[in-house]
Length: 139
Image (cartoon, rainbow, N blue to C red; front, side, top):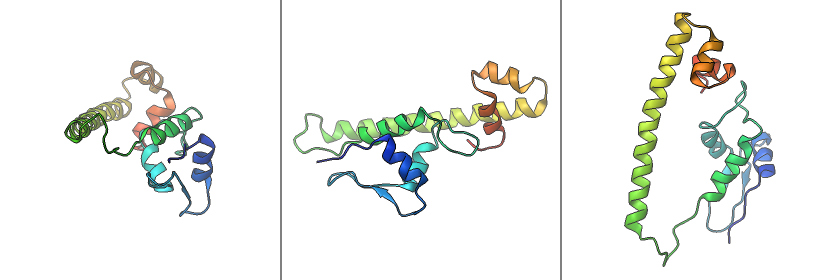
C-alpha cells in the first residue's frame, strides 16, 4: 500500500535541516529525498532564492502522487509502457532544446538593451523576475 504525499510533508522535507531526511511512501515506492525534490523543482516556478512559489507545492505533490509502479496483470502491456517512456524522454529532450533556444534568445535580448526587461517580459508572457532568472542562468 502506498502513502499519499502531502504538500505539508514536501515543505517540511524541503526545510528540513537534516540532508538525509526523507518522506516514506510505502512498500512499493522509494522514499522521497531532498535531492528528489531539488530535481523536481528544477522545472517549476521559484522565487529568486530557488524556493518554490506557493502554487508549486501542489504541483510537486501531484507529481509524486502520480508515480505508479508497474502492476502485474495490468491491462497496459510492458511494450506500450516502454513506448510511452521513450516518447516522453524524446519530448523532454526536444523541449529542453527548445527551452535552451528560448533562454538564449531572452539572454540576447536583455544583453542587447534594444528593449526593456518589462517589454521582453510582456512579449514572453513572463514576469520580470523570471526574465532575470533566465538572464542569470538561475533557471
